[in-house]
Length: 255
Image (cartoon, rainbow, N blue to C red; front, side):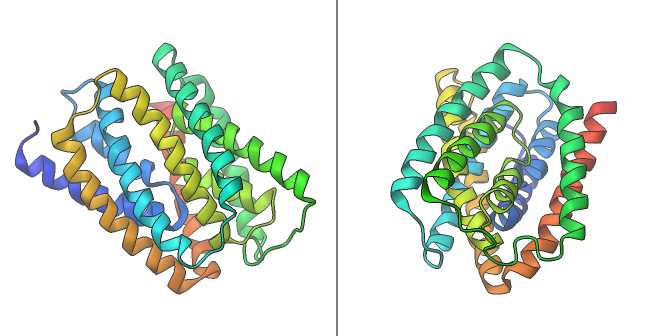
């Protein structure tokens, strides 16, 4: 167990990560680097596995806030959640077998494109822009669940933002609707990773549980704030988080 002052810092980080993640995703960008730097004596697998517990809790509390206001197709959610769970589990297994360093330059380029596109498209995610045929929407959403689910298990940070981007760019959702669906699928991807790390005994519960409580509190406040401020605010917040994610990846490539 870490010293009490380290645990307090981790809880503060968890609260902040939960707040940010509830609005636009990207909480892992805050939580993971802090966990690795504050718990250097622990194996990386133990840190990552332990942080999945607060990530799951914060997302669960945020989902409860969103689904009170945003309509959800629960039958579709069940299908996508199952696919995201399996993809995330597979991604976490691949992570345990190999390095993910080779993918980081590609992801950095993708994030840069996202930043430029979102900045110049002032109407991006402000309202529902597409009405796809039901069959096409179903298969596109399945592809999103599998692709980003695998990414979340394999690499992780920024997955919530990628879900939001995909739901807006490919399916034409607005930010609030995309955020709701992103949170629902994030629950499954986090759970997929948790199952794997539980099997490996890689969760430090004395750290995971206090952080989970704080992350959950941040998730509740973040979701309420997003619902209150609406799509325009979320667009700006999304840009900030994606820029931070981009800088994080660039830093990790050269260090």
